[in-house]
Length: 437
Image (cartoon, helix red, strand yellow):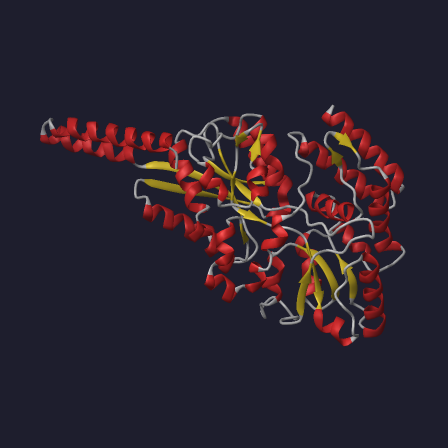
């Protein structure tokens, strides 16, 4: 930690010591009253607004451990909705941070909101609390994601990315290799579905609900065609790669028929449940799915699931959308030092290992992947390290929330046959140009 941070802590200690010394010089009755006042002053109340994770809740237990390690600090936990309700989470944070009353002191934020909150001055820059050595412990892409306008306005919690899960038993049954290209995936899905004779079996599930997850999937399909939404500040979403990607997403449903029309209502869990229920061959989803697929209480495909990077087109590359939630410190917090102390604890190697083992979310500290216990108990997680090193972010811009809504609406319209592919992309492109100026 920096000298600034240490000096601030020493100042707090000096202030408390002076108060105690003054109390000792008073009468016994006054001393008791003053001591009580000092205790009240010393006990800091923080509020932490964090998303609810899929799987067993561990946040409350971690917060209680923090309180035990820091007797003068109490933390109230405000449980926010799960990540698949990101719109509701974002609305809560926008309203709360703009109220500027100091609550919540610490919050979890989707990585795409960091430029927005940092650019608006709602997140406190953390550069007085951290060093370059602190930053070096994390994936470089995550530190970049937590930085806006040269200031560190977020701090890493967990990282995620999209993967292709598949039924290894079914591919082995028909002597098929894990697909590297979209053509290979399409052919394998069609063959297996036609031969299995299971009317409920779907070929390929993903997420096309008009929500943030649709943009995540879009980043991956688009990247797999060699395209991007922005090139610098130039809008390139409606070039040949964009048309190829969106047409393929549409064709998966209506022409290739390996994705059901119900995908238009699917976010993470509705797409996951048929797969772990034994009724899908392929699934695009996040890393949390793997542990659920191995849990007999949640899954009918225990020990039958494997994963690979997502397929790509001939002119593209496998692309995994950079996801995950990171910490932020409210710029209006009345207790910034104690709030950062909480962030430190929540992002510590010990806490990150605990999250990885108990709720299967991926560490942002690279060294945690080398932990022997994690290697033994969750080799899947350890295998993700290289993928996260090269994940692709969504467009980084303070106006990203508006950009996302424009993409969600336009992509959804094309996938629901309300407009054509080219028309939808041209319309999205114009909206993005208007938003970013």
